[in-house]
Amino acid sequence: MRSSLIAGNWKMNGSLQSVIDLVEGIKAGDPGNAELAVCPPAVFLMKVGGMLAETGISLGAQNVCDREAGAFTGEISAAMLKECGCSYAIVGHSERRALYLESDQLVAARFSMALSAGIIPILCVGETLDEREQGVTETVVTRQIDAVLDLCGIEGIARAVIAYEPVWAIGTGKVATPGQAQAVHAFIRAKLEQLDSGVAQQVQILYGGSMNPSNAAELLSQPDIDGGLIGGAALKADDFLAIAQSA
Ligand code: PEP
Image (cartoon, rainbow, N blue to C red; front, side):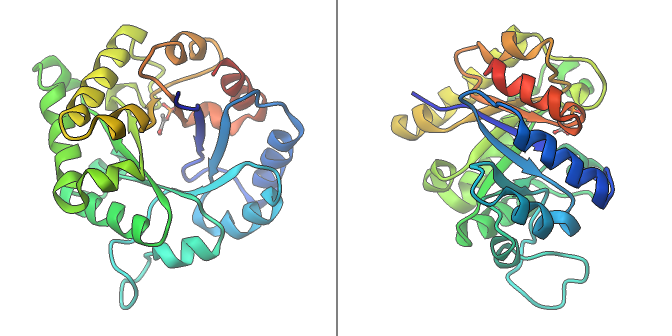
């Protein structure tokens, strides 16, 4: 039986004060049985990590460098994230792939670095609207996962979380129907099943894309949806907790 993970991706939002208020709000609420993780902007990781001590809420980063250390201006290493208290790191978010041109291979290298520091990568995969309309959703998701399998093997996936995030549903208010999301989640699990059925059954596959308190329960009730990666709705403590309670 897989447990549910509800992870908030705060992206580049907020200020020190609003982040403190948000963490206080989440700490004061009841998440039900789901595990919670929050991924604040990197400059607030230390602060948020301190506030989360002994709460059971996990800390995550929004990205991680593909190199260990050195002359990589602007990047943050996996070891540094670990020192900040991160248990998770998002890799391959569609905004990173589209706006910062991160390739499947670069995403895989970031994934690998997270693993080597003992951080659980949350690997984001998903198709654009164009790709869905062309009927190549499964091809795209396969290519994105295969890049990680090529570098880290199924053993790497065993220590990770996958987030299926259709790009057309991210921040748009358009949600994949529970059926559409379940179909891709089941496809991913079946693909992993061909390599290792134990891993396929154990790996958490989250849905991301305009999940909110009104659509969460139906999405999260699908057999292969094991939680959510939440953007906009994670910026309000009540909404984030309400989503967690639906899990
Ligand atoms: C995301 O960016 O990972 C995301 C799912 O955003 P939103 O919930 O705002 O669509």
